[in-house]
Image (cartoon, rainbow, N blue to C red; front, side, top):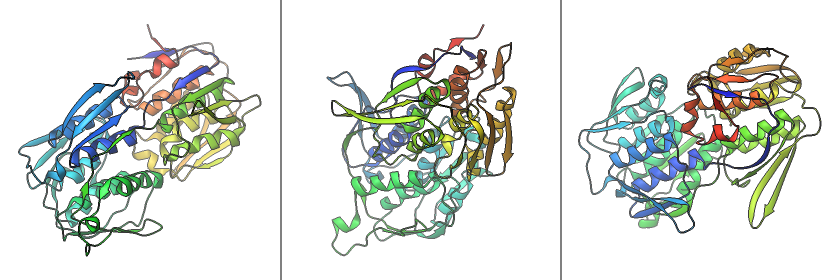
Length: 446
C-alpha cells in the first residue's frame, strides 16, 4: 500500500497506543503464570496478535473482553511454567515481532519437546545467534539457518554459566523471563560483556520484582536472584513461578515520538494523552531531545491523568544525541533533525542497523531523496540540517522498506514538506500503531 501525505501544520490532541514492549512482556508472563491474569488496554496490533498466537501455542487460554467502560482486556489463563503440560509438534510463527521471537525461543528451552519457529521475511534476516549460543551453554539444543529462522528449539534447561553479548537487549530479557522457571536447584549465571538498550532490561527486571514468586519466597534456604549494579552479571536460581496479575498497559513512548516530531517539524501544537513520565521506557528521552532542540515540552496533570504538550515558536537547532539506550528513536530523530538548523549527530547507535531494516543506511538513503545532506557513520548518522526540506515541484516517493518506524518517520516529515510525499509499504505501521495514517490524514495514492 502506498499512502500520500499532504503538507499541513500538525495540531490537535492524540491518544497514544499502548506500549508494545509492555504488552508482549505481560502476555508472555501471564501465559507462564499460575492462574488467570487480566491485561487491560493492551496494544491491539499485528505484533500483539503474533505474541497471542505464540502464547496459545504454549498452552495458554486467551480471551478478549470488552469491559464496562468500553475498553478491551485480555484474560489469560496461564500454564504454570509448563509444570502440568507438555507440548508436542508445536510451531510458532512470530510474524514481524522480534520481541516475541527472542523471548519465546528462551521460553521454549524450558520444554523437553521440540518447538519450531518461523516468521516473516524481515524476521528471517534477524539473527538470534548470540541467544542460541547462550541457550546451548545452558543445555538447550537448537537448529537454525545461521542463527535465523527457521529455528527448532529442543529444551532441557540444565543451567550453568554463559556469556551473552547483547547488541539487542531482547536477548538478555529473554533469559531473564525464562531462567527463573528452570527446575529447583538449577542455577543460571549470565555474564553480559555488551549491553545496548539498557532501559528495556530495567523494564523486564521490574516485572521480576513485582510479578515473580521467587524460590526464596517458597523455601527459606533457597538462593535469591543476584544482579550486578551495572548489569554485567546475573545469577538466577530456578524453582520460581510467575504470579498471575491484573493491570493496565501504559502508553508507548516509542509511538509518541511521531506526533511529537510532527508538531516540532511543522511548528504546530500537539497534546499527547496516555503517557506516564515515570514509566521505565527509555524512549521518553525523545521529549528531552525536543526541548534541547528548541521545543517547549509541558507536562500537566488533568483530572488525575498525565498529558504532555509539545509546541515551538522558535527555530529548531541541531545537537548531539547518544541513542544507545533508545535506538528506536533514530528514524523520528533523523527527520526532525532535517528541519533543524545545523548538524545533528545521532551517535552510539550501531545496533539500529540490526532492527527490521538497517535503519542508519535506510534513513540516509531516503532523506537524500528529499534533498537532505547526511553523513553515515558506522555507529550512527549526522544530519546536516538547513531548517527544512529544499523546495521541489513534484511529489516525492519514499520507500517505507516494510519498516513501521521508517514509514511513520517520513509521514511526519511529509507534513513539513513543500510538496506531498508518497510512502510505500504503508501497511507496515499496523505492527505497532494502528490508526497512524488517520492521525496524519494519509490518503491512498492514485
